[in-house]
Image 1 (cartoon, rainbow, N blue to C red):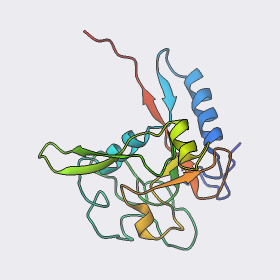
Image 2: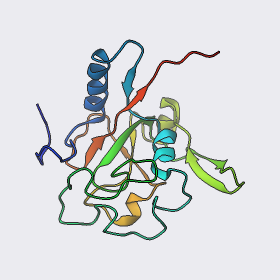
Image 3: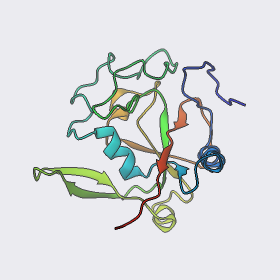
Length: 185
């Protein structure tokens, strides 16, 4: 059953909670080859994938562009792949629907990392349940990417927001990643 408010074969699934997204990943994992795990990305994985090697506010530059992402629009999500993919082939990393990540939400979870050329980039480090409680967000999870009904400033590569784990809305969805088994040689 598709819980989405906006139904269509090419629209993102929305109207799901973080708990629903994790359950979906759990059920999907049961159908995958042994050792392959479907899960939500960590916050750091999400941002790394969103930026795709870029250093700008959006993967395509520092200015919002309605030809590159769905934001501040007619309060409707658009079909997946309506906009260009980032350099790594990932679509809709900015706007359309917020995407849940594994991490708890805390207001104090950034650390400075550096690109290979030595320039700094702010990348989130996942908060623990204790960090979330201490910052007043007990149990809250993080979501990334902004949504169709948000201003552009909420859709940047670094923007994050919080959500209760059971909350649902027509602007919240998820992106699944697959952890593959590997052998250290």
